[in-house]
Image 1 (cartoon, rainbow, N blue to C red):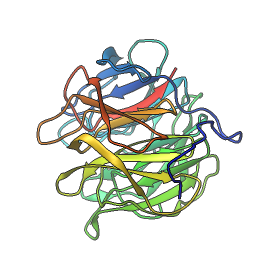
Image 2 (tube, rainbow, N blue to C red):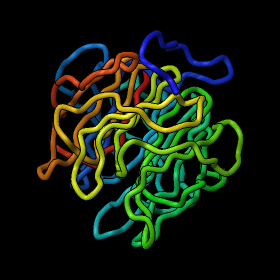
Image 3 (spheres, rainbow, N blue to C red):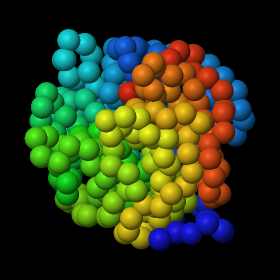
Image 4 (cartoon, helix red, strand yellow):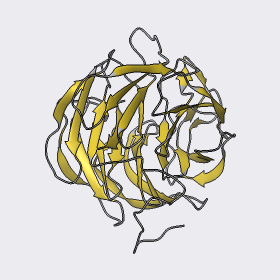
Length: 306
């Protein structure tokens, strides 16, 4: 397990770059089509980026470093979508249709190695899915089956480095309820996920991101909102370790990083929040206020790029 101190923040040679200096926050409660952005290295309020093709909540996002994908979600009246859309992160504008996931669902998670984007199946009404599917981010088209999660659950949100994605927390019904389980995949290789370890708290819908080999899981819901931030060493299976606390307890934020600093935006603390926090990934400690989203919302997608 990684301990505090020196931390390499260079992606491994085997993988690509899945992050950048601009953080994107897309969609969220209540069925909004809003896309916001911030520059991660500075503190400030978010600015309007454009609009999704359709307003949706419980969405997932990932990035190639230049193209961002936003997939799945609830578009209203418990109608779940399999639509994936994309944006060019360096250019303000609206989302464009990319293709479809293999399953229409909400509460998906997504990770990327810079080339391939992998989405969890998420959940349909009362039925968490173990499905993983993938796309090649540079090429529009429909998703292809990747394999299955090790622990079947919805709302397990991944942190990834340039080669491995780790899916943390979640919810399973009827057995198990809130989860502290983690499982992992090698993003470039289609296969079923393997067991990784457990988080320090049992919850679903955390915000997650990574820097170097350190993965971060922040906030979540275990019947009430938590402010706990955990970290893991992505390349070393094991349990989570306490990192610090958010400025306010919340579930369902969007989150991303520039590989050095992580930002956590929005979330639900009873009221919907517009709060953005940040942490320095290499240094254990509590989060600090960054600024505000353009609107208060939760269940939004977070990703970054340039």
